[in-house]
Image 1 (cartoon, rainbow, N blue to C red):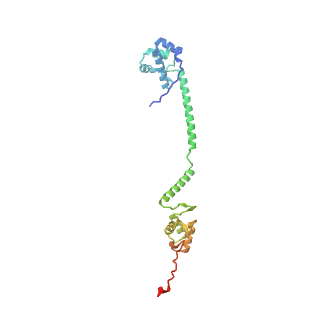
Image 2 (cartoon, helix red, strand yellow):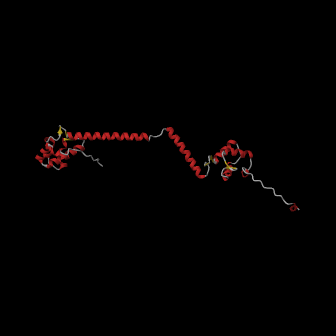
Image 3 (tube, rainbow, N blue to C red):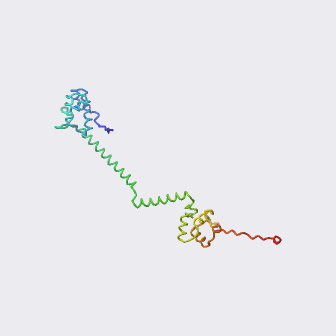
Length: 232
C-alpha cells in the first residue's frame, strides 16, 4: 500500500499574481493543472524531468500548450536543461523531512529508554535466576506428590531421599521409608511436642535400635492380678 502524504500551501494562493495570469490566459483548467503538477513534484521528491512532458499531458488529459505554458512561461516553476521544480515545494519538502527526522530521533530515544529499563540480565544473573527457578519447580513437583518438604511451625518435613542420604552418610541400617512413614503417621510429633530436628530424632532412634512402633511412646501391657481361686 502506497504511503499517503499531505502537502501544505497558502490558503490565499489563488490570489497569487502568477496564478491569476494563468487563470486569465487558460481559464480554471490551468489552476487545476498547476496543483496536479505540484502534487507530482511532491511524489517525486521535488523534481521532475522535462522529458516527462508527454506523461504529464496524458495523465492530466490536457493539451501540450497548457503544460508548456505552466512549466516554461508562468514563472511558477524553475527549470534547467534537464528538470523543473518549485521552490515553495522544495521548502515544504525540506520542512517535512526535518519533522520526520525529529520524530524518528524522538522515537529512538523512547525506544532506547525502554530498552535500557528492560535490559537483559547479565550472564551471572541469568544463571542465578535459572537455578532458583529450577529449585522452585523441583520443590513444587515433589510437593504435589507428598507432604515432604512442607514446613510445620518452623520445622521442614524431610524428603525420603534426604533420609536415605543421611542413612548412607551414617552407614545406618535403619530404613528411611520406615522412619518417614512412622513419623508421618504421628504428624511428626515426638511425644507431645513437634519435632525440631529430624536428624537428631533419627540418631536417637538408631541408638535405641528398636522397631518404630515402640519408638516414641512404648505402650506396656498392665499386670493383671489373677485371683488365687482362678489358679485352682
